[in-house]
Image (cartoon, rainbow, N blue to C red):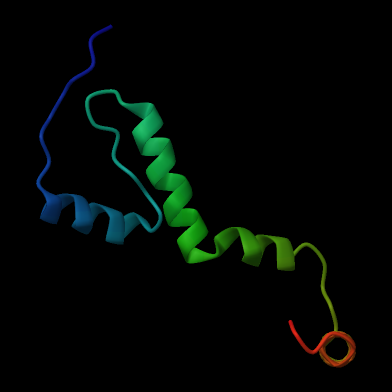
Length: 84
């Protein structure tokens, strides 16, 4: 099976990626480069963090309490070690 190689301009590639969201175009059958670019785009868009956060529903009151607990922990930690 032969792979068809086509040259796509940067502008056309940008337009295609904007239409489909986080997408990459495999050029010349180079999957490693395409996979690397895809991972970079996913990491930059924080989509994995969003999926992780949506695993379970957390009530807003619980979120606020968790944030306050984290802030108190950071404050306590900084007071114990003022150098950093």
